[in-house]
Image (cartoon, rainbow, N blue to C red; front, side):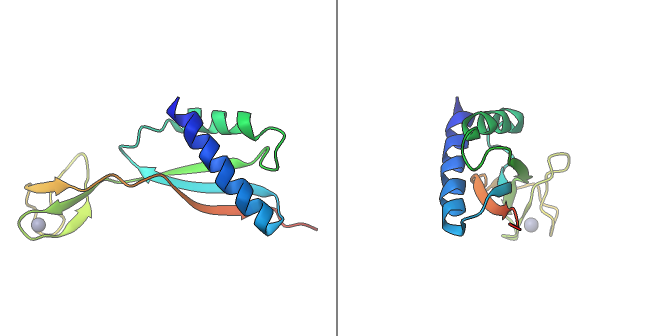
Length: 115
Ligand SMILES: [Zn+2]
């Protein structure tokens, strides 16, 4: 299962950071491309399961999907592709190429403030 592998690498990355900061992580923000075949519910479930008993137990993942990017073949503009209306944002040409989907990224970890 793809999500399980993603959850494991996220847990490893967050744990490393938590050890470095000596703090308990509470939230993490993740971003990935829209075409990335990640099911966020499955990912959160997998993460919760493997985080049990670690310092990441109970923390929440927030996944943000980035729009697809295209590059216009007429004017060379890069733009967010709207699925309902795929055309260049600058010259309205429909002749464009799709750029590679954004990779899955761990954007930010929020730690609990210790008293
Ligand atoms: Zn254009």
